[in-house]
Length: 302
Ligand code: BTN
Image (cartoon, rainbow, N blue to C red; front, top):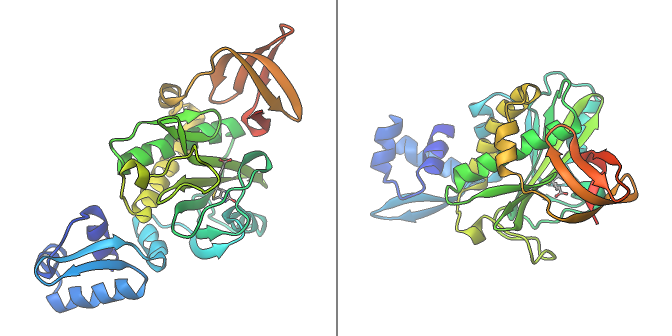
């Protein structure tokens, strides 16, 4: 059913059984049978006696097969889990092979987390929630975060070509100044576990200053966004050591202006940001004139 699902995802309008049968070189009865299998896997279809059928949204039970058909990788999709970061960490800690690119996705998390100990809350169906394992090699935390930010920004613009996605250092993606997505990089045994949350159908209730794709007029299916994101992450993390993403990152990155107040490693640092570097973090001149580097892993706005 993957080819049929792909067709419905890529062409979001109505399709007649006849046109699907021709495009996929399947007998009409087989098209009808496969549509039934998609329904059973949780896909919601809009059906019309003359106009045909259209995908309203994909079902979770189709996601793993669809993603694996695009590029073989370990992938698990959960209806609910505490945090996809924890599932991925268990994979890494149990020493599984071939984990580079392995992906955990959940419809909802009961203990989703953001950076610096913050909670990440989203209702079922509202967000794309995933953790991606990267062998990481020599990439440091800042390189992993910046390469991921570019890949995710490009994936979001691929499903929402009208959007202009900016990066708010180090890990937020903004549209029109409102947060659309966040990135959380954790490490275990030399691997990186890259967590991504994108607001798709709704903004988290407690954040009035957040954005979501639907609110921005983008109706793409979460599965399409997942596919676009993984494809770009695979490439971005391979090229990050050579700095392939740096120019694109700088072009999207919002600057700091005027005096800033940050917390870094539990201390408050005040001063002026001289540069934002995709591999080293912030270069800052503190109020007493010292030049310091503040890495993404431990630095946040107060
Ligand atoms: C942030 O904005 O601080 C980062 C948010 C990262 C959230 C994602 S959702 C999937 C993955 N699992 C988690 O528990 N967190 C990340």
